[in-house]
Image (cartoon, rainbow, N blue to C red; front, side, top):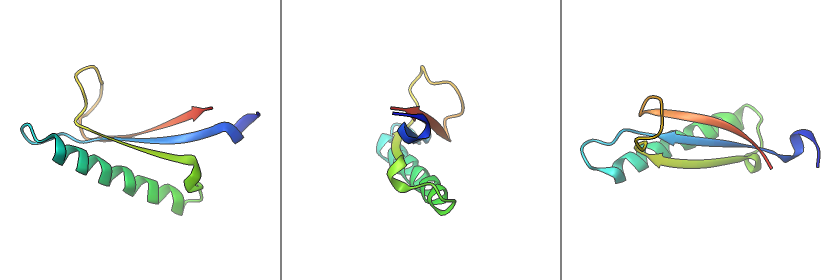
Length: 76
């Protein structure tokens, strides 16, 4: 397997929950991830190369802002 043929893009979204409402945080992070996915598809990236992960509120070990979307290029 060579080069970009084995690469995928992960859209990993986080959202701060209000209080202990992890369900709302997960829904918000999913909404953000899907919006970014749609944008990338509109810009020419094939949908089959994009994986979406809605993480909800970030766990203590994650660094960075609570409300964010990370793009991770993964080689397979």
